[in-house]
Image (cartoon, rainbow, N blue to C red; front, side, top):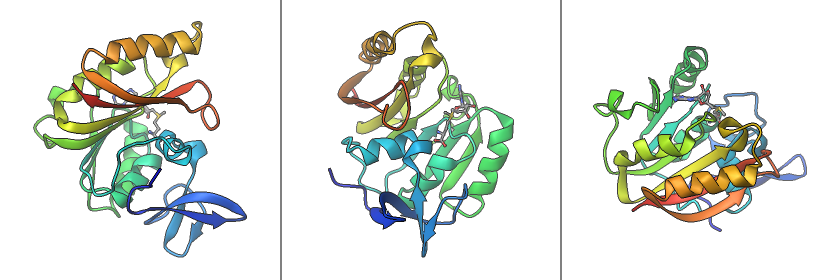
Length: 209
Ligand code: SAM
C-alpha cells in the first residue's frame, strides 16, 4: 500500500510511525519539521497504518466531518489541498480555529454534518475525498447526505463507531446494518476493523454509485 504524498514512515523512539510535515498541534513528538501522526488518536491515521487502500494521493480537496479540536484534520491539511472541517460542538471548534490559524488551506465550519444544506454554499463540489468520524447515531445517514459533494470517482473514508449506533448490539451486527444502508448511495470498496487502535470501529472506503 502506498502512502499519500506528504505522509511518510519514520522510526521515532525505535517505533515506525507515520509523520506529516507541519506545525505541532496536540503535543505529538516531532523530528525536525515532521510530526508524528498518532494512529491511536486518529481513525484515518489507523487506516493508513494498517494498510487500508484509501485512494488518497495527497493534494485532494477534502470535506472532513467531525473535526473535533483538529487532531486528525491538521494532518490531513498538511498533505491535502483545501480542507473543509465541519464540527458542531462550539468548544472543540474553538480549538480547531486555533489549529487552522497556521494552515491557510484549513477552513473550520461550525456546522451540523446532518444538515449539509447549511454549508453547501461554502464547500466546493466535485470533491476528491470525504473523511467522516462523527461518532454519533446515524453515521450512514450523514455519509449519504454529504455524498452530493463528492465527484463520481471520489472517496468516502468513513470510521463507524458501533457503540454510537447501539450500545447493546454486537458490533458486527451494527456494521452489517451500516454497510447495507450505505449501499443506497455508495459502492463499498473495502472495510476493515480498526480494533488494533480503536475498539469496535470499522473503516469503510467507498465511492458514490
Ligand atoms: N475526527 C476527530 C479526530 O480524529 O481528531 C475526532 C472526532 S470525535 C470522535 C467526533 C466528533 O464529531 C466530536 O467532536 C463531535 O462533536 C462531532 N460530531 C458529532 N456529530 C456531529 C454532527 N452531526 N455534525 C458535526 N460534528 C459532529
